[in-house]
Structure formats: C-alpha cells, structure tokens
Amino acid sequence: MRQSHLFTKTRKEAPKDEIAKNAQLLIRAGFVHKEMAGVYSFLPLGLRTLNKIVQVIREEMNAVGGQEIVMTALQDKSIWERTDRWDDAKVDNWFKTEFKSGGETGLGITHEEPLTRIMSSYVSSYRDLPRMVYQFQTKFRNEMRAKSGIMRGKEFLMKDLYSFAKDAAENQEQYDQMRAAYIKVFERLGIGHLTYPTFASGGIFSPFSEEFQTLSDAGEDTIYVHEGKKIAVNKEVMDDKNLATLGLSREELVEKKAIEVGNIFHLGTKFSEPLGLMFKDEDGTEKPAVMGSYGIGPSRVMGVLAEVLSDEKGMIWPKEVAPFAVHIVSLGANADVIKEADHLYETLKDNGIEALYDDRDVRAGEKFADADLIGIPTRLVISEKTLGQAAVEVVTRATGTATMVPESGIIDHLKQ
Ligand code: ATP
Ligand code: MG
Image (cartoon, rainbow, N blue to C red; front, top):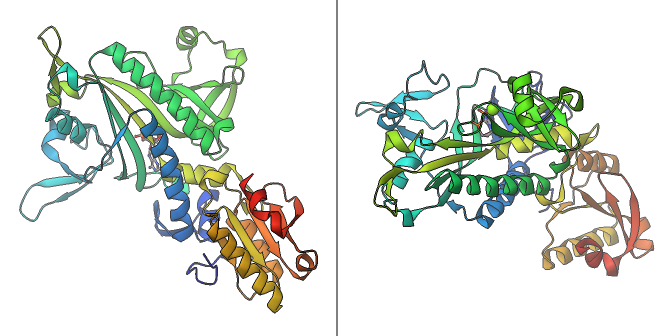
C-alpha cells in the first residue's frame, strides 16, 4: 500500500484523556480511533494487525480440531435465566435493552449458554463427542475500569472456544491439547518469553483455572512467577495451602505485574445440565456432556504488544502480526530514486511480500519518525546514496541496525 493513499496520519500527541500507553501509541500511529472511554474503532493499519492476530489463533485452534462458527451478539434471556446468569445481581456487566415487539435482550458477554443450546440439537450419542467449537466475536461488557486502553474495552474481540466431552478424562485430554495450543499461540504472537500459565481461581475439577499472564508494568494483576518452571500463581490464590498443592514454595517465586491475555478452565457439567446437553453413552445411560472454556482477547493482545514490545520511538511489531512485512521509505524528490523505489515496491508485490511504501513528499526526518512510530519490523531505504551503490539499505526496527544489501539480492534477503 502506498502511504500517500492511506487515509490515516500519524499524530504527535495522543488525546489528553487517554492515559494508557498502548492506546496513546496506537492512536498516534493511526491504528485505532477512540470513540469513548473503553470504546475503540480499528483503522486500516490496526485492522491488519488485529486480523493477523486472529489468523494465528485460528490456525492453532484448527490444528487441534476446533470448528469455527459465529454466534449472535443479541442474547436470548431465557437460556441465561436457566443458568442464573441473567440477573444484574449475579452478573453486573450486561448491556441490556428491549425489543420493540416486547421482551428483553442483552449483548453477549460470553457464549457458554447459546453454544450449549446449539450443541444440544446435534449431540445425542457418545459417537457425537468429543467436539471443540469456537468463534471470534465482539463481546460487550459494561466495564467500570477504563484505564487500560484497548486492553480493557467495553466492546472487544474475543476468541472463545468451548469443548464438549463424554467424561472427565476426555475433557482433560482436550484441556491439555488446548493448553499446548495456547503456548504456541503466544510464542507466535511474539510474547511467549513474557507469558506464563498462571494458577488462578475458578477451577471446577482442580482447585484452579489457568490464566495466561503476560508480564507488563501496565498489568492489573499481581502474579508470583517461577522462572525455572515457567509458571506462575495469581495473587488471588496465593496461600500456604495452595502453594503446597502446587508443590511450590514462596521463596522460589518473584512478584510481578501482569495482564491476562487468555484463560482456560474446566466447566464440568455446570452448563450442560441446566441446558440439557445430554448424550446416550455406550452403556445406554443418559449423561450430561463435560465442558471446558478457553478464551483469548485478540484486541487485548494487540494492546499488550503495544505495551511490552515498544520503545520511546514507537511500536516494534513481531513479524507474524506486523501490519506489513516491510516499510519502503524513499528519500528526496530525485526522479531516479522515485523510479527505483516504485520498482522495488512492484517487485515485492510480485513476490508476495506485503509492503507499506512511504512515497510521500515529506522530509526524511518525518518519514523516519513515522516509520519508527508505526513499527514495521524491516525498513528498506532508497536514496541517492543507495542508488549510487546499486543497493538497498535494510534497517531493523528493533535494533536500529542498518546493512546495505545489493538490489539484486533483496528478495532472497527478505525471504530468509
Ligand atoms: P479480566 O480478568 O481481565 O477482567 P476475564 O477474566 O473477565 O478478564 P474472560 O471472561 O475469561 O476474561 O475473557 C477471556 C479473554 O478475553 C481474557 O483472557 C482477555 O484476553 C479478554 N478480555 C476479557 N475482558 C476484556 C476486555 N474488557 N477488553 C478486552 N479484552 C478482554
Ligand atoms: Mg480474569
């Protein structure tokens, strides 16, 4: 894409009322637009990155047999009453409204209830299990806190997968598969080194659920990290009894701030029983399916990447989720330079390499500052100097290192 066509522009200042670093950076770089507190629109660069995060998650969910669907935002009150999650006294963050034709509805905060009902029309025998079903969908939660930018939206994207099994053992197999898939997801998203499976409250078979927590000073959670085992314990479950259960001792753990990027937990038959998701087992008896739930917030992940993989100049996107693989920057108005940069842009396109091409007629300093802010991992600079050497200057955003690569070898260099 030619940058001169991009409708967004970078900004020197973030809105005064925006206090979160992730939103400040993403707004300044033109990735998101703030609508209201905790409500953000995704602009062309931001949408590209969000879609890439989604795609990484989708590939890993499909790899372990997840089947993708999309459910509705509008919720049928009656099924939420069956699990006692409709009442505002029980769940306090619903956005609710009324149908003109009469009756109430709410915007989905999560989707255990509707998916359990959908599955109940297809699952009737042990032969129909196990299954794993997921979606990417906008969730709505009337969140009180709105200090974390896109990491805590009132409207946000979630990948939610639900597993359905015949018994606890089969459920545990699904859980282990998903846990391994999550580790791969966060590796590919460039935060594997900072992300810890973390014991937290909310377990059904075990006393714990597991959160995936990414270390960040902007995090709202306090966790206790075991570096050697690459696991952590959430402060909410830190006591002597739980540490003993986990075989950990307090001295081995280091207190850190972190943000939850995902979580996985056993649901048992908490939803299948009240919503009637029953199957006939091999021995002829009727049993409720055993369920699990597995969430990741792709929009929160984007905010976390902006928090933890940035420097004072701007963002530094990991390769898999950068809005473009390379940023071509042409310097000056020399016709030969422009011709060479145009040619490079076309060559990359022909080779399937996505490039943002800064073809604007602005000063070099402004181009470099914008490129640093936008944070595409590899920059290709074309100038009178590089032309004289029949080369392209390749700059790595993360380290600032620059090397001259002969023009003829640039595609091979980028593909390595
Ligand atoms: P938190 O503890 O941060 O409030 P949660 O425990 O309510 O989150 P879940 O309901 O399990 O989160 O949601 C699954 C995932 O969705 C979370 O791990 C997180 O990545 C993401 N998520 C949850 N709430 C938000 C939000 N308000 N904005 C953006 N992402 C969110
Ligand atoms: Mg949580």
